[in-house]
Length: 343
Image (tube, rainbow, N blue to C red; front, side, top):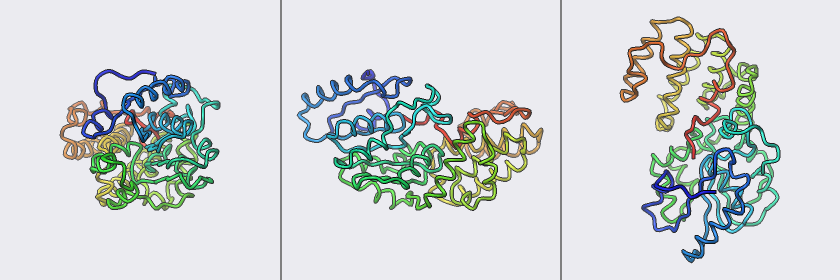
């Protein structure tokens, strides 16, 4: 366990507050699996120095897992976890990029179910991401204690960045006395989607990440694609892997129209929105559709003039899949995983 030198994301975020903060960053390959003693020592020292009378655990992505396992294990503070993984090392997950599947790793959701009493636990999921959708579905379909506060958001895995861009995070962390659900509802961010729909998307995403595209392909005409752009993108990625580039473009174009018609979706993190365009360009290149590629690239340039990749004149330089190969598990990262956009 190390306290990183210099300033990084959450440190900059909390710099304008009056909170006494301890920032911890475990090694990626460990994912907070073996840091308990070091974490406890750091917390004890920080509490002693600050005379803290209240503890809050706060993190996103990898940090969300660390916040959950630490806060649930210790039971001495409220938890805010944005986009946590519950099962580490699985294909398509961010932890899976740095470790193999670990069946012995602690499952925070099981820990929560076993410790029903204690401070509130806020669990936030961007359900346009299949891994987040899996966590959300487990929460919605599970027997959680009253202190659990799951919140499904119309967002990507980078929901923390999304909420920050809308000034919601700053309102939350000023005193931690405002309801996050209310703040998100005021901006139309709360996703009132059926648990079964969310679970179906999650299952298809997990299967595609493991190299099994049939579940995603079967959802091409699913009505839920009209509500969840992440599912539309997932289906398109499966079609690209199957070599059906024209149908993939139709699905991606429909998904872009869905985003364009909804101000909330238009506020999604730019990195996530640009991935859709990279997939469209990849599909046109793989289809040898130079005219279609040029048309889409010009539109991408007009939308994202600051992006050097879209501005380059090299028409075949952007993320093209191999038309002869099935989609590798990593291809579906657009919809199912993190692309390093978490903490």
